[in-house]
Length: 250
Image (tube, helix red, strand yellow):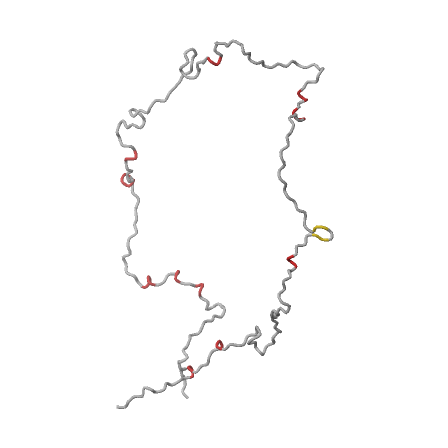
């Protein structure tokens, strides 16, 4: 028997020897200072300088913002300011009436004729009290209703209670109403019209019944005899390892 060699190298084809795509390569950028593309122009770049050392030691003098200038050679520089004072003590007014307390228009001019004026007098302290009752102590009988005895009153009516016997809702004869009876069919007592019903299909299907009807056709989709725009479609994806088909042998 002949031993088979399992370490036989595999046959490499050209489809497996492809290089990397364009996305694997990175071109240098055109922004910034470092890694700039040397084939393109570069604008000058500037940077902030470093803070210099204090050669004169620590500066302990106050800055301009530490001074508060309020006066100048023309006077005070601030805006006018106002403040609220405390409430003063209430002054003691005199009890003399003011001008509006007088009513000179109500005073009759002196020396001229005027109509007499009267007023109610006060009740004297020593007047004898009268024991006679006043007019409002008497009660006059009312004239509304039937309680008046001395005067004639109009007729008065009242509503009686509901009586179960002899009323309109009592069934005296105990007979059924019209709704109890059912209507009779008119075909029993009169001439009856012919009546029809739909029966089931009993015949066998034929070729004529299998053919499609007019609604199955779509004439609006037929464009053979009309001009139409070109139509395109995507091709089929083929494998890289598939060999081309040889149609003619040389």
